[in-house]
Length: 422
Image (cartoon, rainbow, N blue to C red; front, top):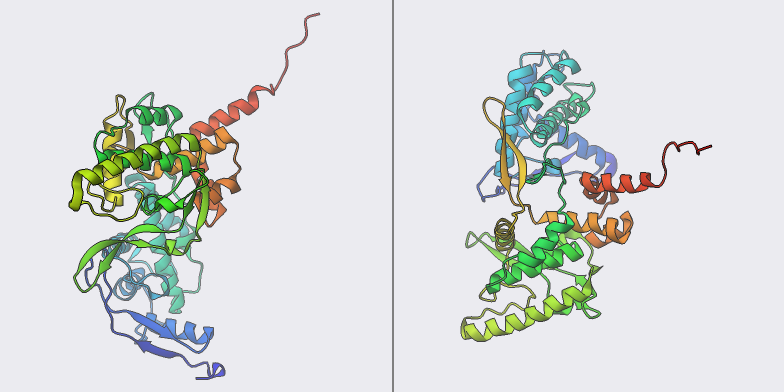
């Protein structure tokens, strides 16, 4: 159809929308149009195909929310399906807003009403959860605007973000906040005491040291091959990842090597303290050869650098389990106190848990800038971030190193100087 026709071409394809656990959610709707203007008309049509509500009718917020839950909650932007877990969360969040402001007309809802409701929510929910409620409200407003039922501002997007307490990780000693970063003394204790008796424990230990000295992701570590080690182990080429996929025919998951890197470009990273890593790699090749001879025909050769006790894939689940078990087994366990979900009374649950694998990337980002003097752009290239803002988030979540840096800068420049003795 010619672009000047300005008539939408809508084609509905009956497909299947599967969630995280491969549960059926609904049908896939795809829009084809001859121009961007036609696409907007088609999108508006899909939001309200029967034109059930007109501008002349009095529209309550509950009507807007009910329609959004029925027709839009199962899709994300550009009509991509949501996961089953995210779909259930959206229903719960939309219902919460409907109970607070559902009886009002959409044009009568004020910013003060939303702020009071949001303050009530922030007092009983973690900041990360409250931000999701805010985002859902913004989607509901956007849906009403696209349907022509509301021509005001998107108040859901204008709500003030709650204080971020999802990274309130407090170490067991002295109650001092450290963000997502391990201390140098923690890494020294990991190097000296981390369990490495079995072959699987040794592979986890090597992966931990590689991550702390290169900043690689867990999937990038488990996808490394010996050919990716360059210049006498001084550099590592990142070209592939070990990811979990789903087979629709057998309805089972499996692990495979993915060279796409989820759209990221391949890169070469520098190894911090390559001499230490070379010693660990030499010991690793020796242990791997002994384990291969011990198992014989039971050995599963994958060609990867890291493997499990039978030579198979060292999956992310095995790596995370081994890392957290190792943190708990140290002479002084590395355990952080995390602010969890709220109970019915609004009290936050505080649990002790070992750090995630991502803490090793944070450790490399923070300590490399502090100890080696790398700038933000160099750290970004090392970590493989597409945007510099992502790297800055890593560095802002380290208040201890930030305070130390400020203290060193202020130490040599006193504000006032005492008068000289006459």
